Image 1 (cartoon, rainbow, N blue to C red):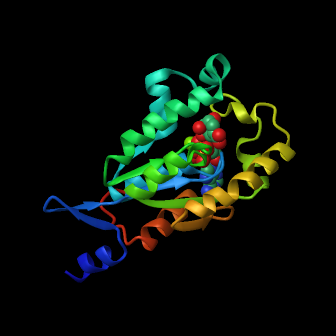
Image 2 (cartoon, rainbow, N blue to C red; image 1 turned 90 degrees about the horizontal axis):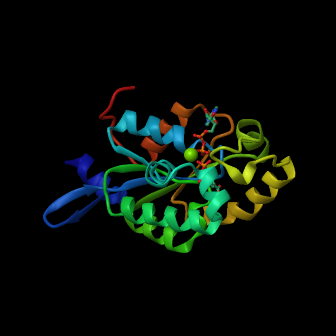
Length: 194
Ligand SMILES: Nc1ncnc2c1ncn2[C@@H]1O[C@H](COP(=O)(O)OP(=O)(O)O)[C@@H](O)[C@H]1O
Ligand SMILES: O=C(O)C1=C[C@@H](OP(=O)(O)O)[C@@H](O)[C@H](O)C1
Ligand SMILES: [Mg+2]
């Protein structure tokens, strides 16, 4: 019982229709912050289901680069919001968002309602090293110079920080260390395999 009370106090559980539900954990941050790979690791460790809004868009509508090229970024954002609405209605999930997802207030509100938002904070150097020039899933970075990444990061950081319930500085941590940090913060039990 103490564990249950502690999880209620941390608002990790909510009560509805006679049942307890486990909140979602939503990962946000810049491209290359590790939202996808930390999401997968967190899901493996906790046994929570994993969704990636980018993967959902790709699965239903095709490659991100093609969507950007043929229909434009605003259309991609509309498809992204469709996926946000779907996953925000679930519970007990880890959600890896795309780096621009929380910039739409509607998406941020939906996620805020459905769980805890974790900002994976990275320096521009780290982003550049990890995903600079990877245009396939990240058309915004196609041929991008360091300065462009730096500008994007500066513009987006206040939004990520404003939404976040918890912030993890990821530059010097492994994917597993980051996942364990999040589990500790929200008292998420280890239900899965390492
Ligand atoms: N903490 C980390 N340490 C080292 N490499 C990482 C870390 N997080 C992510 N990466 C690497 O960075 C790249 C982008 O990771 P990804 O999870 O796709 O980021 P995002 O989904 O935030 O864009 C991948 O090659 C991944 O292996
Ligand atoms: O930051 C962004 O605007 C984007 C980030 C990408 O996802 P990752 O953050 O997983 O790379 C993907 O959604 C799309 O290329 C746009
Ligand atoms: Mg990703």
